Structure formats: structure tokens, C-alpha cells
Length: 320
Image (cartoon, rainbow, N blue to C red; front, side, top):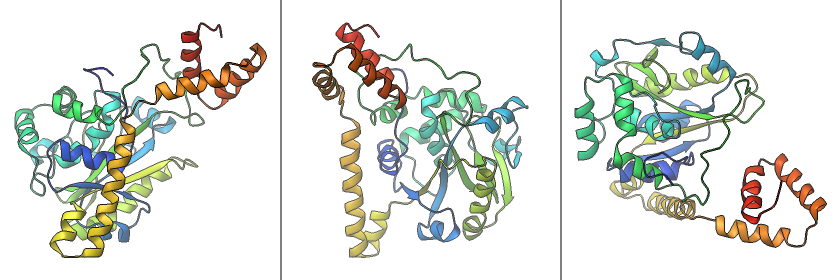
């Protein structure tokens, strides 16, 4: 694991909830939305914003190459005059964390950011979006908390091949995170790969936000044709603390069970299973002849596991 780099982390409500807590943001958690509709948003009220995950595909590249235009909505080049915080994404693996922070750093009137992030926001005020993105990616606190949700890697992947230029929607390309929130009486889209915040429909209340946001997201989804790989996370208040204030014991029990599940899953994410995998591969391969080994490789190749087997074979002195 690189001390200075950013590792890939899972798109998971439990990961992001613990992440914002460790970054010292108070009374915030992240919840999965299984349906993009107004009722689902209302059930999680208050919702500070949502994080939309999608596969960055052909249409995104087309718009990026055509002046980096937004797929929908319009750029707001005067966003700084409206006190809108916006950071460009300068590190690929940081996009999830930066999407969450892009939303929450616009909600300092609703959430307590903590000393570290409050000082960070004050420091970068007046910077352009690229400089803010660089500053965020160089934050030791944010980077170390982000990286704490991935297991240490037993293999270096510096020579990992990049996707070809013609990588299209039929392939498993990169996934990207963007944020939506209510700000300055409009729904804004904050995409770290875009030049400015993107203004969508006018929106004058939280209830109107719940009513209009699903339409904005459905418009975005409609541009991807048959693509089905989308995910939506709601940034909300801490539902356990809310249940305690309301003396709702059933809700308290439910929330405690949810958080226990999050805790256990996050602990598993931090564990390095490479030793176990190598032991299993050794056991599998010890009685295989060359032809059987080739069949195993062919099967692994079709399942996207070739890289791991190549590294194992290299360690064992096998010639692929």
C-alpha cells in the first residue's frame, strides 16, 4: 500500500459512514437508496445530498472531448460568488471520497465539519477548483482515512495495463461518483471531472428537492441506453442518534444491528487474504500437469482473474 497514493475502496454505505465519522464530520451517515423516487428520499429525511455511481462510458467521453460539456444541465461559472464549494478530481481512486466531501463541504450550515475540515475549507477559500482538488488529494487525514478501508496489497501493480483508448460500453470500464445537492435554490450536480458545478432545475425547499431530484437522475440514466449498473447513496443525519432522541426503541435496535454489520464488513475489508489465496492456489496446482494448468489459466482468464494467477505463477517460477 502506498503511503502517498490513494487506494480503491468499495462503494458501500458502511464504508462511507465510517469514513465521514473518522474525518470528524458529526451526525452524518450514508444510506443506500434502492429506488430513485421521492418517497424513498422522504423516508430518509433529512437528506443533505446524494452520491450517484455509474460506469463512465462512451457518452461521457464524447462530452468530455467536446469542450467537457455537461451531459445535462448548464455550467455555473459564477459558483464561487454563491459560496458553492467545488473541487476537481485530480486522483482517480479518490473520486468516491471527494464526491462525498464535495457535498458535505457545501452543507456546513447543516452539519458540523470538525476542526480539520473547517480549517481546510477556510484555507482553500478563493482557490480555483483544480487547486482545491490538489489540496484535498494531499490531505494526510483524508487520504489516510480513505486508505484505511482497503487491505494491504501483497503485490505491486505499477505495471498494470491501462484500458485501451477504444474501451467501450461492452467492457467493464471505470466507475465514477458524482454528487447532487440543493444549493442556492437549485439542484446542483458536482462532478469532479467537469469544469464547473452544473446547475439543474430550480428548487426552493427540501420537499421540492425530494420531488425534483429523481427526475434529474432519471434524465441522466436515460442517456446510457441499456446500461443497468447504477447505484445511489443518500447522505443523511445519523439515524441511530435520531432514534435515540425520539426514544424509538425498535429503530434503535435496527440501527444498532445495521452498524454492527457495517463494523464487521469493514473489518473484513481491511484483512489481506493473499496468503490464503496463494495457499489455495498451491494446493490446486500441485498435482496439475501442463495441460491442466493451461485449462485453469484459460478459465481464470475468462473470469478476469488472469493477473492474479500470472503473479502467482511468476512467484512459483512457472512460465505462462
